[in-house]
Length: 276
Image (cartoon, rainbow, N blue to C red; front, side, top):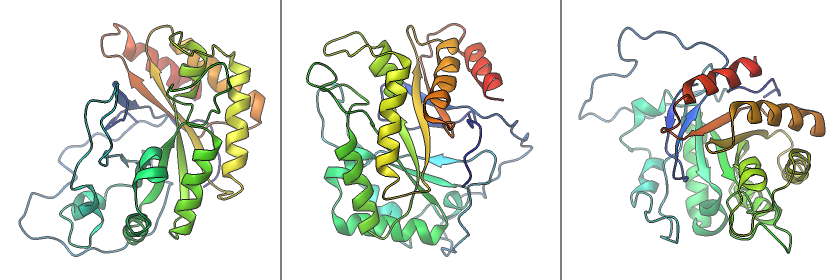
């Protein structure tokens, strides 16, 4: 898929973060006069392959949580029946036909999933014509900051993710960065780095170069929270800085919204206009 100006689609996604996630699009969505999905039925449709395409506007992503360990800051786990999605008789055939991208979470791919599970995921999504994406933290934590902070999973974990998908016979089409700008620049809690925009962009650029050694055509976008001091103007500047530092645009920007923020809708519209 060609790299284009940042593609920012209002849609709610399941997210590993505490904030719910909204996607922005630079292309107006059509007005639906009726549901695009067939009425529910006890009959399971036969799975039919469709060609993989990332040219649809908007792209519809599906990002359900797999089972993950309950840890501090994450007092929940994903669906125990996660792997049932990837069987030929899975009861989401009609919905799957409307989805272009399935997002896995880096932690699950890197450490939790077995080889057999990854092979099953890759094979099933390929049959359905659904592109594979991963959410991953790109930043390497230096000795003096970043430890245990979101966005700082690092290059080695990224390589592990890419290699495991490659070994499973998969093609990684998209990476959704896990909030590197916010947590490396704005976050001011324990182990905060407080890097400037240029530093964050350069570190992300190093990560991208590394992953593209395995998947040269992978498209890179970002996921960031609209919260606290991270304003619309800050994200406009971030998009521009990333391009200036790395020589290409982020392909998309997914926003995690603080719904208690009074003017969040105006802010995301401003980011959308800037992207256009």
